[in-house]
Image (cartoon, rainbow, N blue to C red; front, side, top):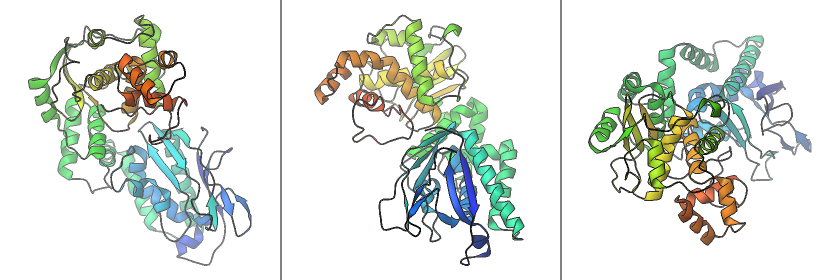
Length: 439
């Protein structure tokens, strides 16, 4: 579901709590004009309400403290992620919305879940995610915190913890150097000033060497995987173990097949659109792509896909002018095809990404775009549907994976994301077409 996001406080009165709590006691509504993410059943008044009665001071304080992580940190399974992204962790004795906020850097998805218990005084019922551009999320949070600070001023409550935190955040956002540092901390999954300063210093230096876009992808991958990949390490692996690629020979998307603006659409949509247009441009039809054709389109030496070496924990390419060195992570042929297609998609979809292209396991906008491109390019959904003819059994999906030379996971994810089979064990991502095949 889409729409203009707004966080709103409708003032109520209470005699409990601190001065700040009492001043900012209100009905909390989060959503669009047509849809409330915080709607629920209030058992005290026996009716539906747009949101719960809470102290919105605590909401504003939580948003301000976690602003950098909410804005930039993609979803991970690491400890501590939920505390910064799930509103139910705010505490202080209120029934908070079971609302998860996650970002891919370009878009923010707010995922509500209904209350599991019917015994709570306020039972949340919303269960449809809301996806908004990240800049809209910023504006909504800014307006909400401004509303809370104005309320505190009206109630003559000054110098609060919220005002101090928010002043710091606003100052950091206005400074490119400070903003980059906070962004890198968030991508690593760290609270402000809690990341290893030597790691942040190194990432800042590396961003000047190979470009901020590449370093942000490495930082997000480290936040997800907990593994440190330095530029020096990757450069060394590329030089000694990587396979040569001639970028002048690599396929490019003609201007007649131009894509929608970067970040203006979901990553999965941009990736899939690019794959379809490239197949059309190259007259590939619906047939599977051979290893030789894929390698030629990527400009790499023949035989890279069937090689079994594994030298790194991620697939990447290091560019040197019109030359490049490519390293693929997987040992399996299907995995290496997918990784090479991801790197090709990165060049097609984001040609200004710097000297280092990385295909990681994180869920940033760029990685979503890569995965979607690789899935649609190697296994066009229309062709997959024609091949399966409605048979979605495990055996049929395994046969399809062999036919298109992709992993069974890719087939399953394509079918799930197009609504042909139940999600089953695949985790909901809040946005369609979140291809999760390994790099």
